[in-house]
Image 1 (cartoon, helix red, strand yellow):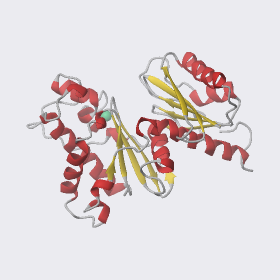
Image 2 (cartoon, rainbow, N blue to C red; image 1 turned 60 degrees about the vertical axis):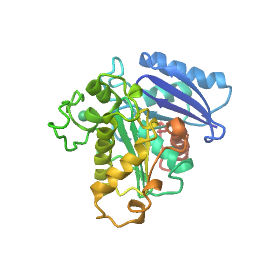
Image 3 (cartoon, rainbow, N blue to C red; image 1 turned 30 degrees about the vertical axis):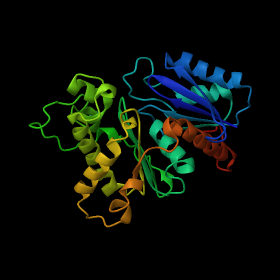
Length: 303
Ligand code: ZN
């Protein structure tokens, strides 16, 4: 059995299990860091099951560089109390088992490639569209980290101010993708919670185009074999055909792969694990951490 912590800005989803089939979860509101970690550790203790490792998929930005002194920390978040908090160290110290650590969206793409909509694929993209926009990617079979980790929600997309005068709501960039197309951006632009906008509202035409512009960039750069769209905004399933149609128009037939021509219905899809992709992916992170801790190269603190 492994432990899983999907650490979000408003809630922690904790789980124990070996996969989605036996995964038992509980939700803890995100309070002060020490208090929240103590509640998560309490969940594992109360479950009465010895977990051999714990995987954490965290909100960010986070430090994923195992050679960095700040590894395992949430870094520059504006969330009070959490800036520079060593979440992986706190959990490892309290649980005494190896801890795997990655972003929440990388955990989600791991869950979906192990058990879900991208099972068996070497390259996949998971994008969540909700209170923020974030993406995780598997490229050539490995989770994409790079210099830090991708911040896909903050890419710049064309923004026609005559058509959409809303300046965007990202505190760093204004009209980046997240600033234009997240749930809070929709609410700020239209004056109503995105969940209450009716299906036929013009808001969705703009939303589908903005998200497709993001997807077109990642199709051309990461070349994923499937794209999975999750998060609260994407619970409006009518968005999927709208996004596919926009994406096809933007790519204009240039990339000849069947997936991007007649196969788009199977290319841009919803998460098969639904809202549990992230917490399930944390089980994958836990398994990897256990494996690393047993490898000859491991020494000292198991990371
Ligand atoms: Zn931004």
